[in-house]
Amino acid sequence: MTAAATWMAAPVRAHERSLRTTVPAPEPAAPALELRAVAKSYGSGAARTEVLKDINLTIAEGEFVAVVGFSGSGKTTLVNLLAGLTEPDAGAVLKGGRPVRGPGPDRGVVFQSYSLMPWLTVTQNVALAVDCVFAGRPRSERQQRVARYIEMVGLSAAVFKRPAELSGGMRQRVAVARALAANPDVLLLDEPLSALDALTRAKLQDEIIHIWNKERKTVLLITNDVDEALMLADRIVPLDPGPRASLGPSFTVDVSRPRDRRAMNHDTRFKELRAAVTQYLIAAGAWRGATNGAKVIQLPSLTPQVQDGLRPQLTTLLRMRHPGRPAQVGDGVAGTPGGGTPAPRMNDERFVEFTRLGKIYPTRQGPQKVVDGFEAKIRKGEFVSIIGHSGCGKSTVLSMIAGLTDITEGGIILDGREIANAGPDRGIVFQAPSLVPWLTAYENVALGVEKVFPHATTAERRDTVEYYLGRVGLADAMHKRAAELSNGMKQRVGIARAFALSPKLLLLDEPFGMLDSLTRWELQEVLMEVWARNRITAIIVTHDVDEAILLADRVLMMTNGPRAKVGRVMDVSLPRPRTRRALLAHPRYYELRESLITFLEECDHQ
View 1: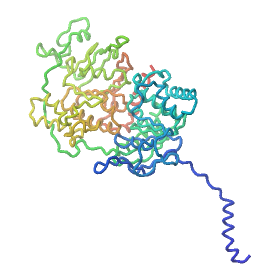
View 2 (view 1 turned 120 degrees about the horizontal axis):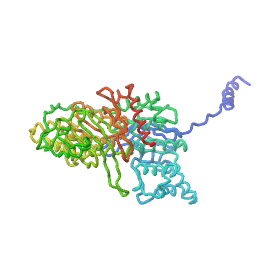
View 3 (view 1 turned 90 degrees about the vertical axis):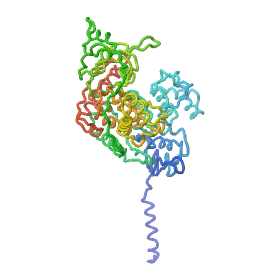
View 4 (view 1 turned 120 degrees about the vertical axis):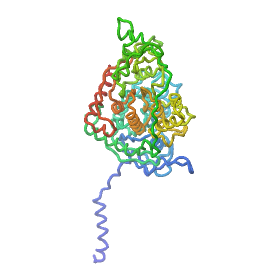
C-alpha cells in the first residue's frame, strides 16, 4: 500500500474502531414536569400585569415538590399552566418531554375551593371522573375503582351523603379521591388544605403522604405553609412575591421519612430548614415600614366618653362566688352605675375574670353544653392566647366576653363590672373583615372614633384615625374604599379601628386565619408593635401554635368540645419585643411548641 493510501485509510480504520468500541449511552428519562423560561401576563396596554417571569422548574417522576408562595404571587397561575388550563406567553410547559396542549386526565388537579356537584352524592361525584376516563371498562370495574378511592380517603361511611352534609375537610377528601380515581400520572394540589382548621389539615396531610407512598404519583403542592411543605415534600421551591414573580432557590428536605410532627420538633435538620425557608420568605417579602415614609402623626391624648351600657346583674354572680351569704357592695365588683357606693376597683391581677362560664345551645337532639366551667383570670395589660381544635368553644368564649352571645352559666367581669351586653370598651377584630364596603379605610375607622370621642375636636379625631392607619401601614391607602382593598389590607383597617377606640379589652377571633403566611406574619408584627405602645389587655383565639407563642404572655389550652374548659395554662416567658426570626433561634421556643402540640394531640385522641 502506498503512503498516500495508508494516509487515506487511517481515518477510516479509526472510525471503524470507534464504531466497534463505542456503546451509545441511553437517553435520560424526560422529567415528569418541566417549565422552561415560562412567562405569563394578564390584561393589555397600561393595565397589563406580568404575573410570572422566567420560571424554570424540573420535577422528576415520583418526586413530591412543594412551591411555597403568597397571595398574588402567581401560584394558581403556575398550576393552571401545568394543568393546561391556560397557555404561557413565552417559554414551554412540558410533561414527559412533550408540550402541554390542554387539560387531560393524566393530570389530576385539586383546588383550594372544592368544586363538587352539590346535588350528587360522594359516590356520584367520584364516579363522574371514573366514568369519563374509563368509559370503555365494565361497570363493575368502574364501581370498584370508585369504592377503592373513597375508602382510601376515609369516606366509606359517607358514600350517600351530598356535599352540603359534609364538613370542609370531608369535601376536600372527595376532591382528592376524584382526582386520584382518574389514575393521573401527576397530581397538582393548589392549596387544598388552606381553608381548613389545623386538626383537619394535619389529618389530610397524613392521608396525602400515605397515598403518595402507596401510589408514587408525581406531586406538585402549592402551599403558603412552611410546616406543611416540610412535612410532605422532597423539595421546597419558593415563589417570590409578584408581579413578575420568579422561583427562588431549591431547598432539599433531607429529613427521613416517615415524618412525625412531634419527633420533627427535635430534629436538628428540620429546625435548620424551617429557619432557612422562613428567613428567605421574610427577606423576599420586602415588608413595608409601618408608616411607609408618611408624615408622623402625634396621637392625641383622649379619654373615651361612652354611655355605660354594662348594667351589671351582680347578685347571681356574687352568690355563686360566695355561696351562703347575700351579695354585698365591696365584694370586688363595681356597684350599679348611677346609684350606690362604688366598690373598690378590681385588682389588676384580675382585670378580666371568667367564673365557671358555661354556654348551652339548643339542638335537634336536645340542649348541648358547648362550654362548661371555663375559668381564668387575666392581668391588666396581659396578652393571652386561647388555643384549641375547631369546635372546642374558643370563639364562643370570645363572643360571650364581647357581649354578642348570652351567657348561660357563670359570669365574666371586666375591670370590676359584669359583662351583660356589647360595648365599645371592647374592640373586636374578626376572622372575616367587617367593614362597610362603600366607605374608605379612613371613614370605616372614623365611624367608631366619632362615637367614642364626641367631645374631641375634629382635628383630634382626624389625628387619631390617621395615626392608627399609619401604624398599620395604610397611610397611602386610607382614602381607598374597603371594596378596593385586599383581605390583608382590610384586616389592617380592622386592627386600626379596634385600637383607635381605646378599648379596655382587645378581642381577636382568628384575625389572620384567612390570610397567606407572609401577610399573616407581617400583621402579627404590626399587631405586636401597636399593642406594645398601648399595652391594652388582649385575648386572641387561634389554632396556630406558632401564633399563640409569638403573641402571648400566656396560652390557655382548651379541651375538645362539647363541655370544653381550660385544660392547661402555659406561661410564655420569652423576651419582648419578639420577632419570628428571633423566635426560631430562641432555645426555649421548640420546648414551648412541643408542649402545645402534645396537648392538642392528646385532645385529639381522647
